[in-house]
Image (cartoon, rainbow, N blue to C red):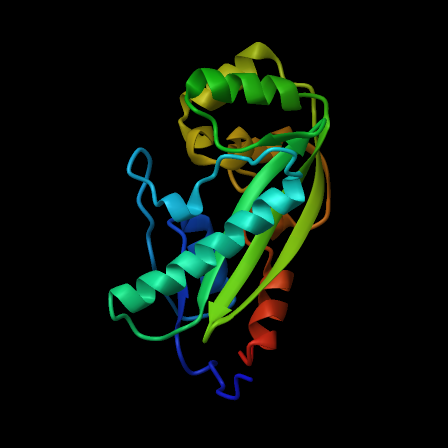
Length: 208
């Protein structure tokens, strides 16, 4: 049982996402960042390859929990301050297909063509690891895109914005123009659902 109040301490954020950093700052949560290696020298503990018969929800929860656990190991290896490790993972689901980050501009265009005029789900899982304890939560939102023409897609991909984002778009940027309807968590679609994150931190004794 964790009886310490972690509100006065910092947490570790196991993510390089500037959007997640901005959202944590919005919550007035103090944090330090733990950055994993990028492919091809990625950390094998957080391999993002979907497993056979893995549903989108199981996929993002597995990765968020793996990132939090690996982040906690890194804290020990590097003799960093012992603080809770928060991790997250986001993916899209369309017609049963798990959609992650595009592999390049051509793949980004393919993904955006598939999303055009359709409703997809955005799933973001968060996980918190501390003192041998690991818990997670899941946010699921439904997003409907307007119909996009070829020129719109090409112009957006040319900005470079979709290349590092799950589903090849960031709702907080220019792609907000594509969103006809959203049901769920706007911050979850951004990559860190604030309600679920706050609730998870409170379960670990963090007073917001």
